[in-house]
Image (tube, rainbow, N blue to C red; front, side):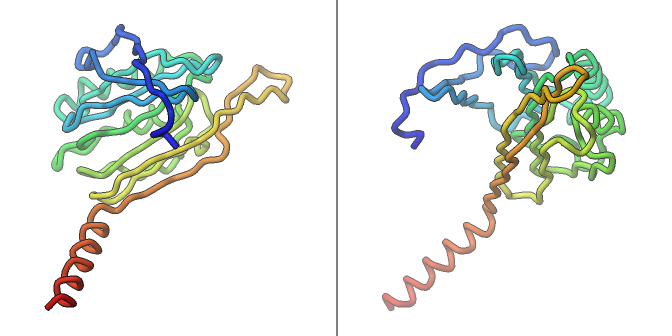
Length: 204
């Protein structure tokens, strides 16, 4: 288990390109090579982790506040994705909400996600909807691993990265063994309250 693994400090790259990106974020790595990044809570917009496909080192950790500065940061996100080399692995998540309740994300956001393997028919991200994404630059559309859930759900995505060399063209990235874990906070609280009330009734 993770409890039995020794964790040490992991030095994240400190060369953020986006103006709202946060430095000095705590991260650790265990003896199995699993990196854990403690993202600050209640920071709106996208968090993006850029991973080198050759050695799986973290190239960058960026934040794009498409909530507060929708037009400016959506353009910054599009420029960032455009400059990524082919096969660069990208993980995207949120720790608050990606969008404002009355200000939908622009089409350019979804165009950029498609360049990372997002589906042609992406469902719009709603206010406070949990969103998680694993993709790669120039991954075929629909091949990314993505989840958009209802509110009050904790999302965890897993996927293995495979470099496909069985082609006459340049090697390309594939995502295999995709897996999704969902934890419904509301259902858990409701179940816990129901169990507690039953215990009280039994005691009475």
